[in-house]
Image (cartoon, rainbow, N blue to C red; front, side):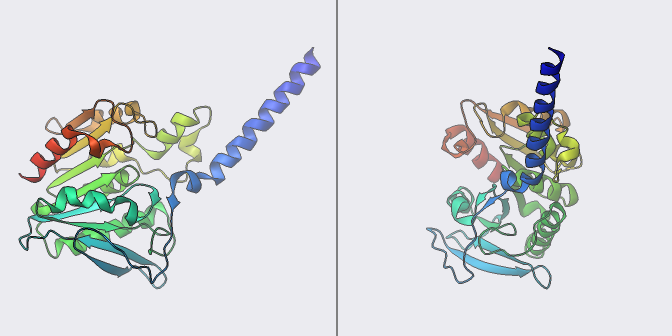
Length: 268
């Protein structure tokens, strides 16, 4: 009997180690699902836009699309950090939420996404966000700059808003931190130590002076509502956590409440 128990214990430990190793080395695959595009690829969108190449260093180049309102009068700019799948093509449709109210939308692809090339690390993601903000601040005052993050991009947006003041920080389906999110799925592993990426959204929100608004759906199957709800602990009394009942991870844009709240924020 003891031999049988010992044998099963060895099998369980072996499987635990194998799965743990896979989790560690496949983190980039789970977190980042990019679709690269040829450098000569031509974008086609329903709203006016222009394309910008931002040299980051000798080898890395950030590709960004600027969506512009039809009206020549600009109320400001929305720096938009998108989710973890594909590239700008997937998220461009959301730009009309802002351009119809007179805002430019600056949407950059992360390294390896779309036509952006170079290494992708947490530090580089932060540094590139700072570079985009500096470009925006050369054209707009801080009270005309909105920082917006969706899914993966929420942590990067929170970091940027913690470094530079802005008109508003808006987060759609955020996470508490990357280790916290991974730990939800792999709770039997020490993800705080194993996670290559930290992106502690909660920590950055503590330093954000601008008003913060969070949108999250109760039926989010990718970033569970209870994970995002923990961010309430670090919000200022005047910040807002808006619950979208029955909203999932990818359909927040379909709910009237989202548009009502977003429009009221952008019209301020």
